[in-house]
Length: 274
Image 1 (tube, rainbow, N blue to C red):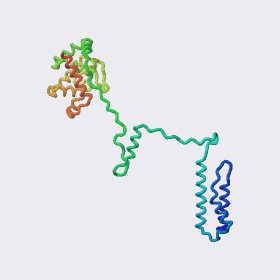
Image 2: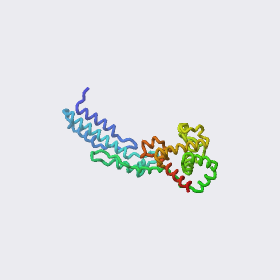
Image 3: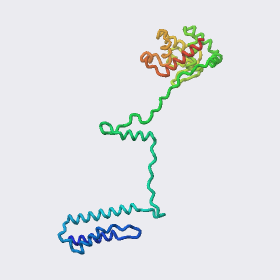
Image 4: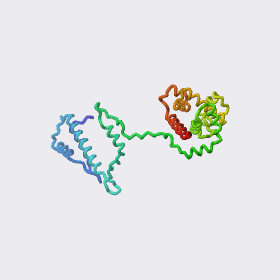
């Protein structure tokens, strides 16, 4: 069944009265809109020809008035347990300076209108320096000489046979194995002068852990390298440590380990020659 405009406004009035009737412990909404409806109905000034647009405006006004009063009720809400106003959330803790700098950089617009990421927001850690050769301890060298005197006859024999300074042979042994005839490197080099198995076989060494075979084979290899590089001690020692193929192909790209090796052997060579 259809309602005429007057009946519709009466229905709106009844709904408004139900929604705005005061309840215990609550606020009463503003009666202004309801009063205006009462006056219109009592005076009969609302004609049957009231337009649908006018009714729509009245309904919209009712919704807005209800919403406004609902917000006021929420604003006055209190904690029922002690009658105190509900606590407001406090400020968030400040972010660390590094995070604040990062967010500030993100918020900075670039020329194209987009956020520009920071080039280096956080400080980069300083590169770790690899330990280089340690200073020589002359007392320790003298103790080594006294401790390993049993190797002296072998070193002297190898020096005479291949024409390599005995002090240089001793310096290579100290650097390679610290005079340990049973030493084995992570890559498989063996004995006093740390011969790789294939190199040892090529030099006629059957047992790389035998001190005499190892020193004689290692000294022969060192002499071959000195001849290959025309007496250039640096090149010969680099090839002994890094391999002659690497030195031939990339002499300008010696790894840090090989450069430290050169320094160490030459330091020891000078000390043993003194």
